[in-house]
Amino acid sequence: MARIAATNILIAILPNPAAVPLRFEYLLTRSHTRNRATEWILENAIDDEVIILSPSITLFRDRDAMERELRIATLRAPERYLLERYDELAPTMRTARFTNLHFWNDPADLSALMAYLETYRPKYFVLELGDAPQFTGMERSLIAGSTLLAEFRQGKTADMHDMTGNFFVPSSVVFQLERLGPTVQIYRL
Image (cartoon, rainbow, N blue to C red; front, side, top):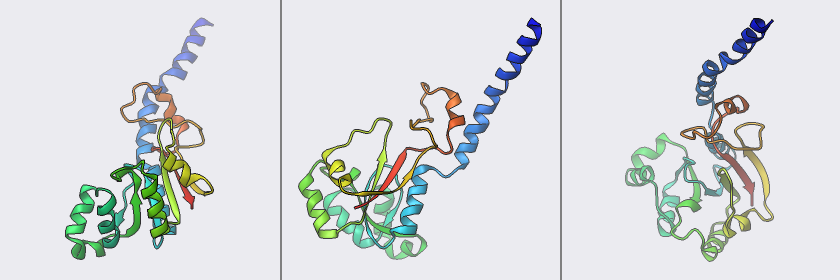
């Protein structure tokens, strides 16, 4: 009887170490939450002004939006390269009209935000949420009165888990996830 119980325990425990890397590899093949948000923008807001707050959502701006952005923020290296070779490279990629508050020179400057809102009249706000989001005054002012249109999450669980390089997250969490990445919300302003 004890031998049968021990065998059942081994059968239940042994597959887990092999299944975790297979499940993680599966998650790596799924569309990341940031990629899903980018696809949503390109499908639904390509002709509209968008405000993004994320260090990692990858979109390219049109020339006008990049030149405008240089006055209030910094461009990422790929965008600087694109701006220098815009006529040659622009036909090969889809571009959008947006600003990314993460790269603004003073992201806490509400007066700059209000001036931007009045001048460019953006329709959407894209917000990337970290493990424990703490909203700034700028984020609160954008969310207030806005409508949540889309939300891209790791899965059905309420908690967000950073699986890359986070050794404090139990490996069994991979079985609760449908994809990797932070929660990304898209609001209609």
